[in-house]
Length: 484
Ligand code: BG6
Figure 1: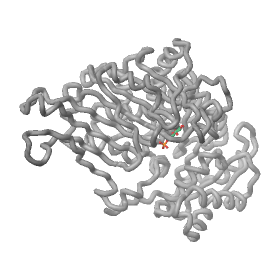
Figure 2: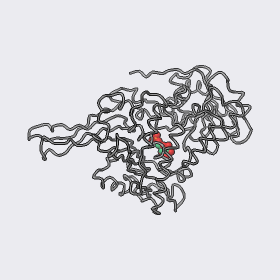
Figure 3: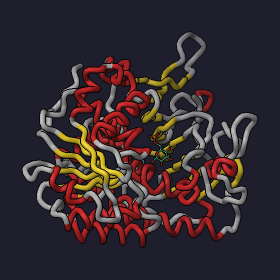
Figure 4: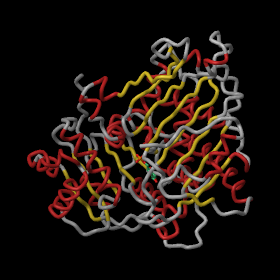
């Protein structure tokens, strides 16, 4: 299977925060890989913009070193690296002052797509948008890309939306949730709406419950300042998990188009019941023999920020009434594993009698690692000895089924940045969607705070606090194992 590269017309991309962590680790390597794939035409320019006083050569040398560290094997190809560095420029700019702005506007061409990536803290978004506007860079084919955190709650998200809207139209604003750029997350839509098999069963009549797990082994060291102020609810649930939930639960949009899709996602968020105290378990990881605990990682022995959250959600609409959706995410868990499991109901009656046991189909969509899908099917256990039933997975690991191209899937940022250049907002969040997600999560956080208890401690390398298991046990269900 050959991957299809659609070249894009030459464009200008300005990366504000061009020397920062996200630019170094994700944005520049992603652009480099797209360059290597042949997607950028002659004349394309990428301009780093930051406070540091680099000249163009100095910036190229800086990016060279970062590519070696973060761009993987492609960075061994000296010719490609040199070619990519050649399209880089740099401008020293003051995001909340006047230095560098006229220079930047003179560097850009009127005739082509211009994208401005705000890879900076949200407190700078407003100032950047205003200066771009004032210096004549906000019109026509200009787009801005903004990263999370998009606000700290509904009120701050709304203010951010209003500020950006003073200078840019909604069609020019690309709010990134990098989960939407992941190949398997998009595959969710292909599986649901490209097959006849599942959609007729995709409702509360046939689905017992759904589990969404995003487990990480990393802790929060190195980003404690940000994380301690956010916690798992704001850092992961409000955005990434909410997006997964929307894609798994939404009605089929009439077409794969930005507003049709986002309208359907929005309806899911708006149909979520408010979460009560009993529906949420928060946790915080302990130290183990070799790794520090959460308190040491953020440098605050009294921190009550959660590094784990498990929730029981209910969508109140015709499709899902009565089918709970359990979601959980956490740091420093047993394995890095993200998956969605759709657990179907048992057959209404077993013709094989009670000794054959009860069985159910489970469709598991593995987001990472080892992307693919599994469908647990019930079959007869081979051999004599009566009708014994056993559940076996029909395993489709994409790399096995689709060959080497499936192993070399583009990073989420590669796809999303090129979508910005093409002007495709399908995989970006709309203003109302972000605000609706906050409108749901704000009261949930208030409910947790009302308990007046710190998050429950859990062991590093475990599956989270015991109470998260109880969240499902009390409904007669259990979480799937988080195992490597
Ligand atoms: C980020 C969160 O948005 O997503 C991080 O801020 C988290 O805390 C990361 O680790 C997870 O992304 P991925 O792509 O590694 O699953």
